[in-house]
Length: 120
Image 1 (cartoon, rainbow, N blue to C red):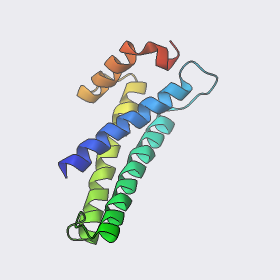
Image 2 (image 1 turned 90 degrees about the vertical axis):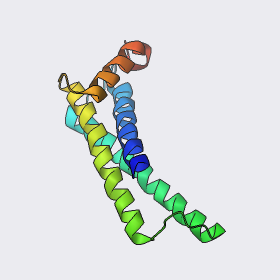
Image 3 (image 1 turned 180 degrees about the horizontal axis):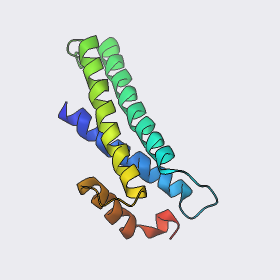
Image 4 (image 1 turned 135 degrees about the vertical axis):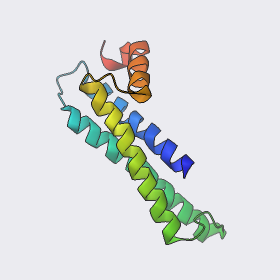
């Protein structure tokens, strides 16, 4: 659960950063809510693809990566969605200029260190 939650938060942040790379310094404009929505969808998609990968491993190689099947998969997807919401929320807070917590500070530091990626 910790792995799914942590990776979902990270992928939510990555999704927000990817969207910012696309819109910063270009003619494209995106509202903070649009960036957050993209980040959320990006992170949940990665989580869903991971569950498909686990299913394939179980079916092809006879492994037991999904433990209790549907229940394990659903909890993993729920945790992925919560983590994605947290990561996307940090991206939204950054764009709204909020001080935020450690995730917003980490985004701000990453963007400051990599200005060339963000049109600056």
